[in-house]
Length: 217
Image (cartoon, rainbow, N blue to C red):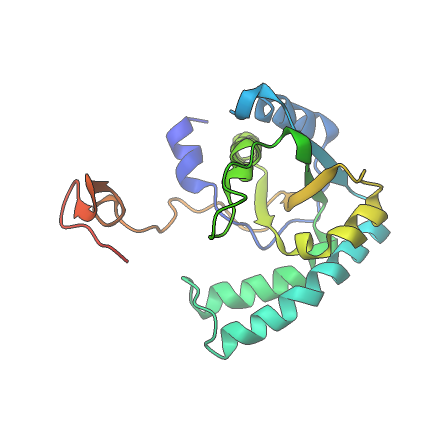
């Protein structure tokens, strides 16, 4: 698959076909994903592939603990989302059928190998993810190349002690998210809907569009 096509059609899949993903497909995707950029080449990321039914059911339970109140806040207008009602319904159905997704990949990272240079600032710390999420996107693209869909979730990180105990994750590793993996129940999108370049790329000053008027919100 041509790279640009993969990049513009790798969205969040919320409806999966029950077919199993063959081990060789997973191996090939992980083999490509591991070359993602990471600070100091410390290679902090470890992938925990979960296919056992009981484990997936427990992960769904942990996910729903946080999804259901979050979904209620969305419905009450307390949380802003970019999608419409159809997207929200699909997201709720996804949450309640997480255990039926063929593969759940829990993303782990060794804490000491993350260079978190913003940990002492007075804002949300995000820098540690620079050595994690490029590899996750590599995995999503590699799976898309193999006609396998993905959905990145992070709510299970709120239950890290329980997830660590459930899956035997050592204390020195944190959880950075969970990737739902499987063949899509519907066709991949022909092109994802995103804001135009003119509204998100600025020149020298925030809000001054490089290719147009720009937008500062």
